[in-house]
Length: 474
Image 1 (tube, rainbow, N blue to C red):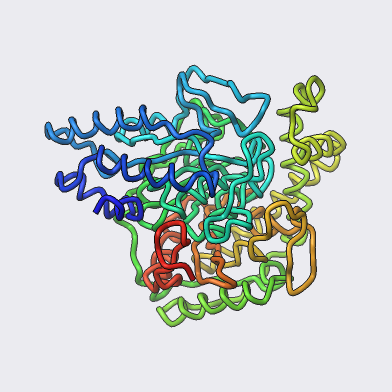
Image 2 (image 1 turned 60 degrees about the vertical axis):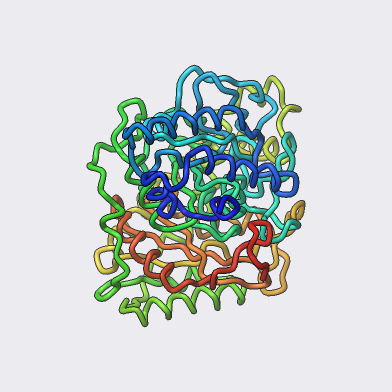
């Protein structure tokens, strides 16, 4: 049974731990062994901390044996993206400049997971400073997609996506500024949820772009994402962008009943210039949802035509402001790609930045109007299949196009508006998973979770997993 444990979800493992059918130490050992055996190939972890994890698991085991069961996360092994602060522990931010950074406090999300009794197995690889979408890290090595080790896992939370997909952690957290949760979720065939901006505190997370950053769950199932969302939600006065809105019991709100659900489709932007294999897979999933009772409506979002400009200007300007001093003092210590983006951000004018914020307001208005008549909006997560590690282009219908231009085209609007969005696998093409994105109204995460839950119940991957996870490869 030990070898099977890392493949299970939180929902499956929690009752086994609660009822003492397995022990937290047994589970932690199984996950750590899987992580250690796969990491040479996948490079999902920057650091595996077996000694600390076993100590935490032993503590959880003692508590559960003594009747002090804290809840469904008690004894669950998790590794987090190495951008979230752990008090007294090294947090590298995937960088050379901060490779020995040791914060003196926990991130709010880390503190909440500690309170729930989570067992932390280590820190996960990421794109340097979260400023990129490949997780080809010049300081800690490239992370590999477990479905095909020659392909990128996406980024910037690529280590989280790869680790969850390869059963090297039961679940994880990522950060998302232009798609950095949803992109690796799509590339690695897992669930990635970016909640509404302000729903989950970002205190203790090193920023990339303060007005666009989010933290969210990366999991094997929709239920697990809902569980982590309800655990981590809540107002935090230490985060100036935190919104004081009540949390919800998202797991109890899950329903696969789509009767009466209205799904919006925007053709002009979200289905323009999409690789045919991706488009066919996503449209096939939409037809499945329609057969389950949903109604499909075509919607217009005029300001989307300017969203790529607004996302690029906002993220580059804010990132360059954050890293300005280090860029001046030690530019050679940044990776080439990140240094280029930071230097580019220094050239953007205040006029461009203010125009970008005006576009964001118009996008807010357009989406608010559309969501008066629909429950969710569905799009592809990525317009292409994952490209090879080291390549700067992607293939869309046989044409080689710029990776940077294409990668956040469909995810960026969710950051500009702060609206909740989830990526869920909807099929496989060329041995690689295809992600479908579901967006919803602000603070209505249950809308996107329910549609994702209904789709998940149809088993779109047909039980197929990466060969590294121990399942039969496609």
